[in-house]
Amino acid sequence: MVLKTFGWSFAVTALGLAFAAWQWGWEAFGVVLILSILEISLSFDNAVVNAGILKKMNAFWQKIFLTIGILIAVFGMRLVFPVAIVAISAKVGPIEAIQLAMDKPEQYEALVTDAHPAIAAFGGMFLLMIFLDFIFEDRDIKWLGWLERPLAKLGKVDMLSVCIALIVLLVTAMTFATHAHTSSGYQDKSATVLLSGVAGLITYLVVGGLSSHFENKIEEEEEREHEEEEKAKAEGKDPSLVGLAGKAAFFLFLYLEVLDASFSFDGVIGAFAITNHIFWMALGLGIGAMYVRSLTVYLVRQGTLDDYVYLEHGAHYAIGALAVILLITIEHEISEIITGLVGVLLIAASFLSSIRRNKRLAAAEGGDGPSSGDKTEVRSGV
Image (cartoon, rainbow, N blue to C red):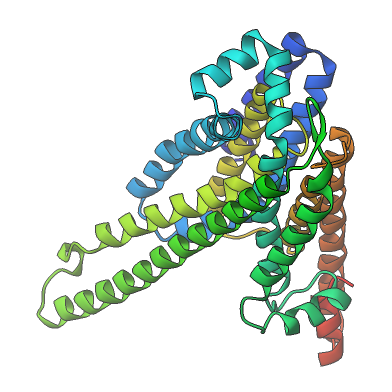
């Protein structure tokens, strides 16, 4: 079952890493490997959400999502999107950006370095909003309970995430952006950082709005479908002939694509904190995207979601760390290895906490059962 589901992912990983080592050396091998792990880690919650929605769809629409969807995810978001970001930021055409990356790597590196303050501000704000919206939401399961409980109470204040993100952007523009690192030395990029940061914030709000729109449409279609089925049964007709399932499935498909794109943003933007090499980025993120799709299929076929409940928390803390790192790199250079390891370590810590939680639950079920206070402790990682 595992080999059948993840076989293509294993094959792509082996070929991709071998190609990276052969074409660019062991440094590329390491960066591509870290990017792959980072993409899988950051997109774990994507796979869980996809599986939860995908299981509601029939086999035809599942196949559409897992074929057309993977083309959009791997070749669109992980290859075209990084090129588009560089092209827009450096004010060159997409074909010119690719040609420069292949034929004139030094000139391309200078363009990317000059565009980095804008990219970092845009990505930093987008990732920061993902992190803030997560930690300010009240959840039944908490990993770092001592931190997440008070933050959940603060999260009841409307628009708190947006206010904090804007404050962080203003502080960044007045500190790091005044001595931004460029190919020609340190320059004042305050205006660029402010504009790009606001663009990142707007992008997040638009994507979130679209997701909510499709989610509402799905609920409306499911309600209408249920009413039509009940009406058909009352009239003695076959409910399968009502025909609304296809429309509901279509909205589900659109909703999944918007969600998938929004989850792809964090991996692509986070990758700029690790490397500016566009081909290393596309290769590493593409390998990770294959695993996300395989994991989605695995969860759907198994009919259950993963038991490691703190992984989603670890992924979002990694997103928050990447957001901070991106903003710092506007002025200061940070090693790609250090940046990548921060996310990996946070994911590993959440994974180990999940294992300990599962053992506590198993021990509690084996005994007389925990008290109400023990249940609260079991549901919190710390």
